[in-house]
Amino acid sequence: MAFLHAQRSGQGTADGHPRAITTVRRYLSTLATLHRLLELPDPAASPLVRQTLKGLGRGVGDALQAAPLRWVRTCRRSSRC
Image 1 (cartoon, helix red, strand yellow):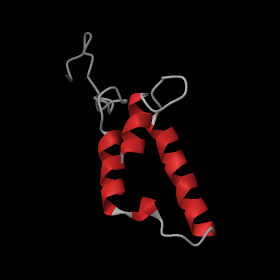
Image 2 (cartoon, rainbow, N blue to C red):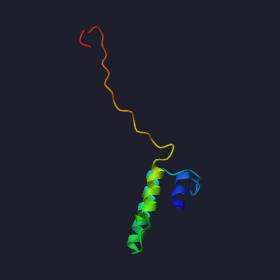
Image 3 (cartoon, one colour):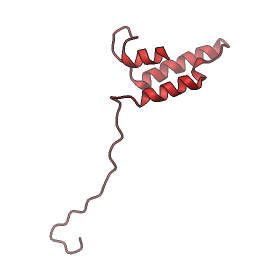
Image 4 (cartoon, helix red, strand yellow):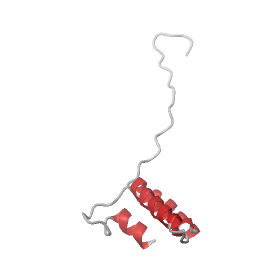
């Protein structure tokens, strides 16, 4: 999990820039694939790793959900509003 936090914060990267959550997920997927190919236990399958990744996805600075679309009636010289 230290790897996930370091990548997300930028402390564990060569250029010091934080990685997007999608990039961290891709790294984790690559590690899981390599472990399966080498017939080693998959560290990405751990519930702790999955929960950490889910928590990082809810971090500050991520895109927020857009407000719902609301239809507003505009009444100009209409008696039906």
